Length: 203
Image 1 (tube, rainbow, N blue to C red):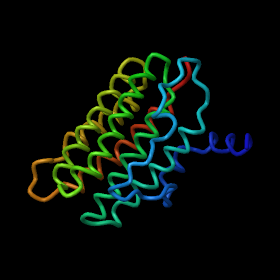
Image 2: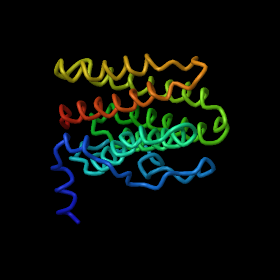
Image 3: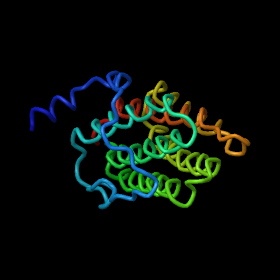
C-alpha cells in the first residue's frame, strides 16, 4: 500500500490532463450519499505532509471534467454536478499552510452543498444550477487568489487569475444554460489547482 501511495505522489501533474476515466460512480439527482471523510471533519492543524489523497482526488476530478463534452442537456447537468462534487473533495485535501486549511475546508463544504442543491431542489432548473455553480466557483477563485497573492510565482498567479476570469465569464442570465462556459470554468479550476500544487510547500 505504501508503495502505491508513493507512486501516486510521484505522478507528474501533466498526467492529469490525460485522464479519461471517472473514478467514482455518477450520482443520480436523489443520491445525497455522505461526503468524503475530509468533508466530515475539520482538517488537522499539524504539519502538511505530501498528500497522495489530494493527487488521487485531483485525478478523479480531471477525468470527470474532461468527459463533460461527451454529454448534452440534462445529462451534462448531472455530470457537471458530479464534477463539482469531486472538486469539493480535492479542495478539502488541498496541501496548504495550517492557517489556510480551515478556509479551504469551508470552500470545499460550500462546493459540496451547492452540488447537492443542484441535484435536488434545482434539478429541473438548469439555469439556476449554472448560477449556483458559478457562485461556488467564485468562492474557490477568491480563496485561491488569497492563497497565491503573497508568495507564489507570477505564472502561478496568472493561472489562478485565468480561473477567476473564466468563472466571471459564465453567463447565468442566458436564456439557454451556459454549459459551455461553465465547463471552461471547471477546466480552469483544474489548471489553477495544478498550479497551486506545483508551487506549494509545507510551511
